Length: 219
Image (cartoon, rainbow, N blue to C red):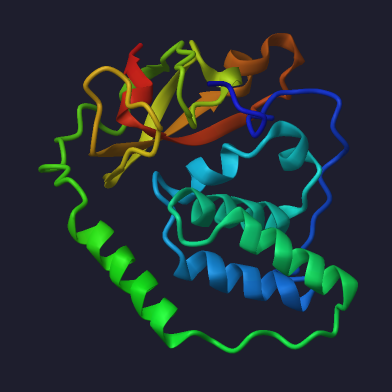
């Protein structure tokens, strides 16, 4: 599925503004902490990029993180949507209302469920051996899978050179392509600007993408 997050090479968006601040408001730090503490089935990228297009484009960076974690908690039954709506209504009416006390029993149940889910996660098997080496020419596959994918549209079908090989990492696409499942090698692939943009490319420009092995084939 070509998601709304896949903005590379697209026109019509405002210029990118450089911003060195990690957080702009205190709530963003809290959201970061919540996101780090709460597991996201299928991977955090999958939950972020599965947000509704209007919600994704209309939200700030940490707002997306918050929406994604809320959807995850509702989906796995940790909270109910009715609970969320009641809490939002309460603090919308009185922003200074006291926060509820922690519930040790609920915390223990949630932690136990998370540990059980981690323990019962299917064994992905041994990592595969890297198919490509530094210096190899590869081509990004031309695919439009039904599920979530991290392969940018603008690079599909384009050829590049492997400049680094990373350790195997878990494949986070929602519906693994063909027989690609579990950990697999990740490559840094450099694409020349002319290969991607043709005559519109800047002289001597290039783009480097980190790509799972499932995304590339011999050029």
